[in-house]
Amino acid sequence: MIRILHTADLHLGAFFPELGEKEGKRRHDLLQTFERLLTLAIKNEVQLFIVAGDLFDDPRPAAELVEQVASGLKRLIDRGIAVVLLPGDHDAPPAADGAYAKLTALGAVLLPETPGPQPVTVTVAGQPVHFYVFGGCALPSPTLLERMARRPLEGLHIGVLHGLRPVLPGESGKGLSLENLRDWNLDYLAFGHGHEFLLVEAGERLFGCRPGSPEGLRFGENGPRYCALAEVEPERVRVEPLPVGGRVLDELSLDLTGCETFAEAATRIIELHSSDLLLRLTLTGLIEVPLDMAELHDRCAGDFFHLELRDRTELLAGEFVDRMAGEETVRGVLARRARRLLADSPPERRPLVEEAFRETLRRFQGKGGGRA
Image 1 (tube, rainbow, N blue to C red):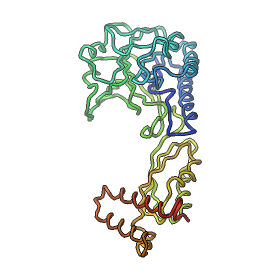
Image 2 (cartoon, helix red, strand yellow):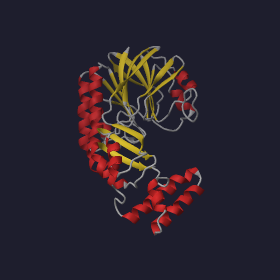
Image 3 (cartoon, rainbow, N blue to C red):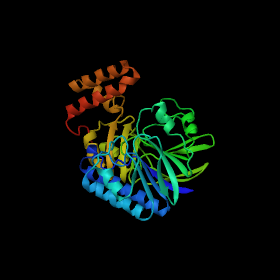
Image 4 (cartoon, one colour):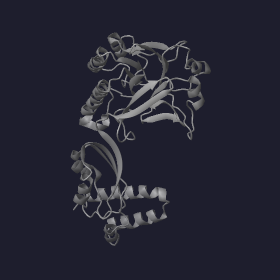
């Protein structure tokens, strides 16, 4: 039996221009998550550390970043932990003088991107482990699929794949079928590329795992992030998800119905605050005051690591517009016409009408117009 820490899709060196002045701090977050992975590997006394693709976000990452990664992996290698790396679609092909060359010089094993005639054999904790690899996103030819099948060799047999997704029971689409996985008959399959944690299993058979990205990179990669601690022996696999992420991404909706002032709306947003949270917040509900999203963001953003606001509130049906519609002014004409347009619009277009009305009203009233 060997114990494995399996991770993928770290994307070290990725850029986050949407975060503005916090981009550098977010890039450092990814490196801190890498350090947590190393610590977890040592703490859990693993014998094998696998990165199933996209250790880096680019095939030629900055030299300083490569030095930091090399120093971290050396901690594992010096403790007798085998390090096995597969390039992904972001950091392949590895240059002869690039980042992976530096890491292999330390003793890490770099797997080829496509399966060869024979698996790559590495001694792990005194026993042979045979690696079958595939790094492409397109479904391989029958010949390459056959090369992933178990050979009659003593030791454990592990597949490392980045790009191809397993098509599990109840799913559809292109990818690896259960027949493929069964035919290969490997002891463990270490998947990468998909950024959400997934146990690759069917019935009582656990084939392996896709650990997902250990740190959420974009909205959609929300909530806790994991790596996989796998214990593998012939005909038996056990996988435990280990929490590893630092900051959390989330997407929420907040109903502002009844808010009568700008300050009240800001207070309700700030109640969600967390300095480690990257939040995309959709504002909904019937409000009584037009909200300037830029000013509202400025008021609230300091209580979050990052905040995005989306305005889906309803203003036209409120008492504020009732009063406006009764005016014999250009503003009153605007309110009456906007209400008629809203009533004549299909449901899917009504948010657009509301948005257009809010924007026009802000231009009438000036920045922060209607704020109480």
